[in-house]
Amino acid sequence: MTCLDTILILGAAFLALFWEASFGGLRVLLGAQIDFLPALMVCAGLRAGLPTIALLAAWGGLSLDSLSATPLGTSIMPLFIVGLAVYSSRELVLRDQTIAQVLLGLAAGAGVPLLTLLLLLTTGHKPLLGWGTLWQLAVTSAGGALFTPPCLVLFDWLHRSLTHGQAAETSFRSDREIRRGRG
Image 1 (cartoon, one colour):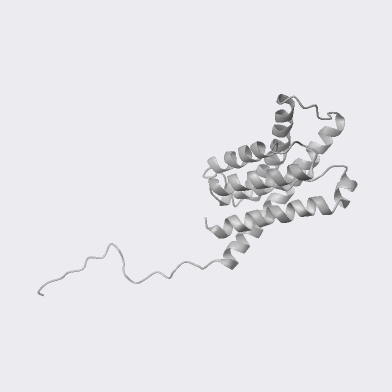
Image 2: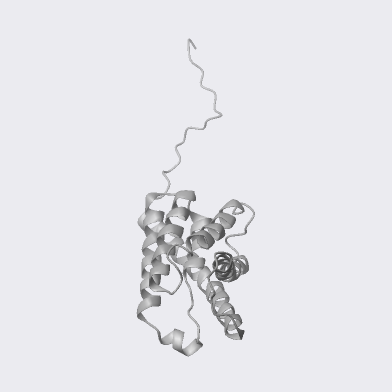
């Protein structure tokens, strides 16, 4: 993981939040807002370290809360929990398999809103709950599932394009014996 990965992930979060706030056509068509931050947390959990996950959770959560009706800071902990869960099990995840990426995106897309709702209910807020909540949860989960694989492909391509490749291997082998002395 490099500093470039952190910059790319935070830049993608900025662009995703800008798109969510500026263009409401998809929100009006579907009747629910697709949230891209859970999918980005999956990408950060698979590609980056804990500092990047914490930065994305804090900055993305505060930015999302400032653009929505949730109290400021509510989305930070659910985003961090999802990122930490992916990070802690990333050695077990088949990150190159599309079905694994879709399932992680689906779980993150459902987990973040449910954890946010749980946090709101435990802190004494009274969010609007009804049958529309299930539709919004389904749309958010499907959006996370559909956005995670292209997001990972994009980050892999950007990483390959913007970083140096590995140095060529030398002809020296580490297991070769070198004899010195008189011959």
